[in-house]
Image (cartoon, rainbow, N blue to C red; front, side, top):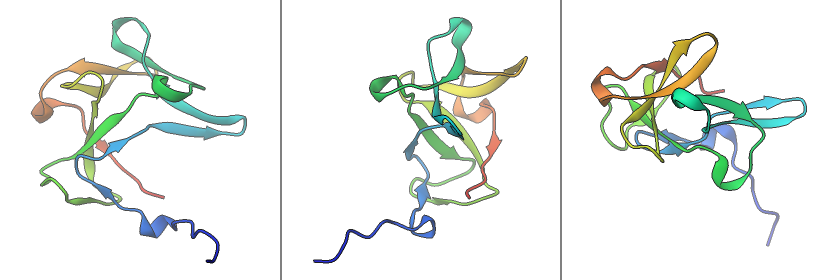
Length: 112
């Protein structure tokens, strides 16, 4: 058997309702968006294992299973806290807010 083939980026598809991580690749390593601050404000940190927050990605007006492509408007629902969605309360913070999917903050996704 030959070497295990690593998936090329174009081979990977994100579907409506998939679970994703939010992360930033810094020079010193990947930092993940995780929970634990007051007032539902979340922070970036170098975390491992269960501390990494998982998010369900929902496409606006999407049907379950729809492919998500660059330029799509999406919403991020916290897996640990259903019906809590990612939003920006200001002050360079991101947070989660209890709301319905209809009125949750939208984000335009860019897939590199």
